[in-house]
Image (cartoon, rainbow, N blue to C red; front, side):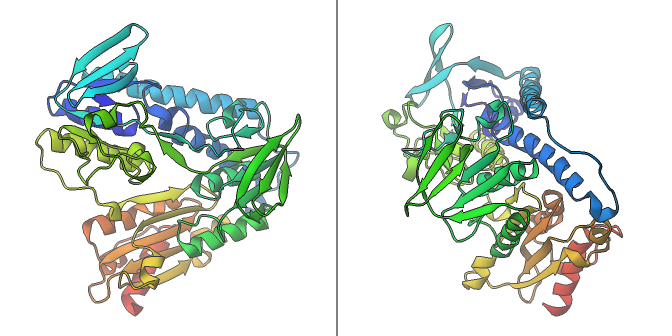
Length: 451
């Protein structure tokens, strides 16, 4: 019995049926979960439009002159976002049906570790399961005094119902979600003010990457304010964001991106003894077990690392373990992550902070993309490739890529981290010339020679 149809749930279901289990998946929001229907898939679809706008804005770098105004038709953009999300959900639904997964629409609650109560349109039924996987996800955090109304004060799931582009969007929160949407709306023509409670944007990312991105944001006209939001009020035609120091920021709309809260209330977890940790997240070990035998948990409801790729892997690991397959515990040190701004910021493995504090001994090299021939051809001026390796052996420990296609360029570094490759091996691998990936092999060569 899998509770939740997001990446953790549907990937776990596919593994379980492949291993011969009878699988029921209880789905409340729609197959694909909020990841597909309201979060990751819609946001990256929306960002794809902003990337197209950015390419027009930078066309003069490669000798292309655009005549007339280039603008996005918001109604068409939002319709495309919603249609693609529904289509993706449909693809997953058909795949599950083809593989023999029984999808049960409804809301689940644990009555015992092996009995699940499911309430749907047809009433309530009690289902027995040998193994239960909790994959219920999370929802946007609400700050008292800044409750979203879906019109002027918004969370990121409400953006796609806006009838027109915000004239002046105030984004509260400078983490990944805040930075991505601030960048997207700026590229699409909105005036954007980003309210950051930290010294810099993307406080959880590589400091060099975050500083570069902040410089790019400000160069393109984004107003970045330091402070913490105390409340948001609205009028008929705008919003006023009040900071804790008493200053205010006026705008037409406000987007709240202040984190997520796990969907663990109402599941009966306390009743059956499933232990929760701070913030209401389900406590799990590295093979996705909870404190109750036979009950596993995966995805955002665990708070381990709130990425779709991690959720999916947690779900797979849970099923491999529960159904007796050999399985390696989750290794967070091999997880690659990407921030879909322009330029993108991708990272994997050890961090600059770990190296600087002495937590990890590593040699490092940073190679600006401005020296790359392909980058020059494409008019790319912002970005870099950074490598970390173990002194002596040269084993790749991690890396950071800041580039328009960082989400693709991080892959060879991720492979190196996952499989313990050395900078020598990367350096001796052919890269296309000219290509941005050539900077990956060149950085490895520099580290091999001088590290």
